[in-house]
Length: 313
Image (cartoon, rainbow, N blue to C red; front, side):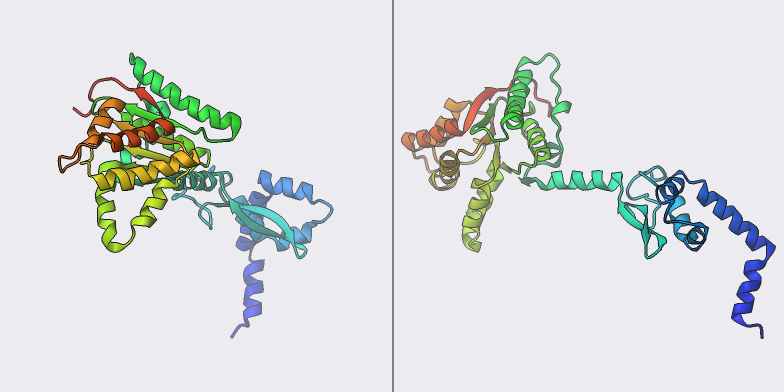
């Protein structure tokens, strides 16, 4: 039986193998990246090192670089998805290490931005909104709201600090108030500012149930201590003295004291919201307690009206 070593030598010395080897070597050496690396390391690399490292050079030369051969992250053609090879010298030979590619870096940035927004019961389309996608054609009130929202962002960019007051956006059903909040939350996320966006009626229903599982204080702390808080559709909830005074009152008192900006959307203007908050489900009329809530809302937000047609029809 032929020895393994003799068999390998025979295969290596075969004309077809030698021809293929030279073709691969030529392909590798024509790679711009390989040429640049050999030029940068000309004092360290000779023909022997190149020949002994040809497999690594081939791995590098045939890979996708800066995503030129990959349609997307899932379709990455490299050995390690989302990573591209880089040549380096290691123990006297040429080796390959893998670095994150531009597509993976962009994907991670998107994921990191998404992590900066916590939403509770908010629709997915709202939380995917972008300011540049807001239709402002022939709508002066929409232009004004977006301009005020951008002023808030510009203040952050110029000072590096959060303004003390958010916005109280009010107007009829279905005109895009929540959409503007979602767009603003995403803009804040790109600035590494964490936002908690809450659909108020559903949140208050859950808060009532939280008494039983003893998670009430934890949920209240999560909302009231948010870097930026957005309360969507305030005024659509059924008012009880407890949700008004011990939940909304607690949240707003903390944010007013800590000077944390809060955003609201509502179908009510401030006067109508005060009237709504003054009347509980039990038929009680508590004007002073409603006024106390409104004082806090005015301290943490600036009212701005939004008009337009109902886009849900």
